[in-house]
Image 1 (cartoon, rainbow, N blue to C red):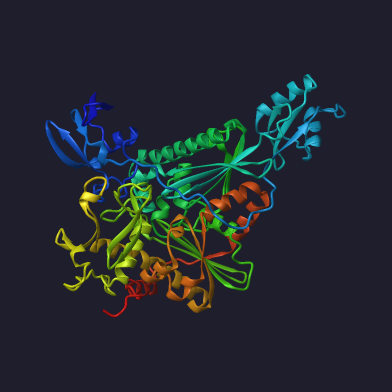
Image 2 (spheres, rainbow, N blue to C red; image 1 turned 180 degrees about the vertical axis):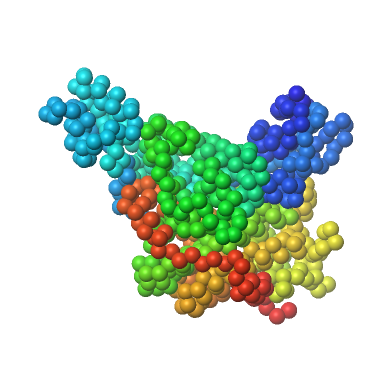
Length: 592
């Protein structure tokens, strides 16, 4: 065994010889489980400073195996909790949960069989077959024997469990949004419909890659890949269940219903289903319908009789999270033409007009979340999330009101939009050198032989490293925003609708909450004519998952909506490439 110590000599963790340093630091809680490139040494986000045999050096943790005792500069690691946006807005469903309780004072003894009496008291048809859960019959025999009162837990026409006494007020469920980057869970009281607690965290699968394609590859590379990805997300969900239950002071054993949304790749990885088919043409999931299982069979630590429901999807890249968004935002109820977008690592969008729905998905990549940028980082304490550039130089806001360590996705969009408005970026995206008389000139620097804009000098940051926006960062943003707006225009073209006909744009997801319509228009994330039609709704997918938890009718609505969606496939279509090339430019740039 080897020891890893901090600079003071204090032992931090013991390590098996040859263990990957990144895995060690993640396990010890010293570094977030975040490897946007999937551990291939490309993103350089796991760069750490260590001392082996007397010499300090910077190494990539994902490429370094521990072969001796070493010291590490933990002050530069900056392990922080991800800032997750859990709140969403929308139309709440009528309260009628799929799982309910019925109190039975005692069986009246009128019928021959106790099972028949239980079904009659619970208001469900007498079933010829015994219940799936044998414990129900065992408990029923004991309650009947002692003429005891009990509470039946009912789902549809099935008796899930029996509990001693009157437990009508002890009935809980959880709704989960399994995002590519973050996971959010909501604990609800199913006897009142009230939300009791929210728990969220970074999706631990990010240690295997920031985007779904990288994770699909990781799952397909070897037999252990899929198991690792599945195990870490199940462990994550169980931890959030524990946190929420403890926060609300309720028992996990009283949680009987769980509802999940997430994109198809997250769904496959959660259930341990090989997602390789999603990564290859024709990009098909194993199934698109909803899924209902016993939670314990999937590995979740709630009541052994609890059920788990996953909303239906549409295609390999439009899944239950999009359907969740749609059942929280009834966008097809009116005659107006409405677009709903949820932008993160992927960009899913839906167009609604009259009774028709169209949907598509574009691979925006991790640019909007800062993962692939030179100084990019997740939205966590130390991340710059707002930038203003004017004659006085650069002003910025940092999450947590601490010294900055990097810049997150919304900050990058703010910064590049500000640079465009300041005349520092031309229409093609090229970083310009200001005139000698321009006070911003000294902030345009050269790094690795290419242009960059200095946001924060090294002596003003938390880790002594300067924060810059590079020419490559600008290019990455151009690619991401071009993918979004090109997908939107292709979807409109497929539906035969012109851009000016759109009357409303619903911007869902955590990312959208930190943008301004002005900056959206400046970088060209949407056509300029749509920017004053934006409505920001936050985590609509999570709100929709709550709706499906609170209303069994909403699950039926979700299935009907999923069947109505016309999926617009973008891959391999020449017209998409033509639009994409044109949308790489910053159209809002004024003549230089």
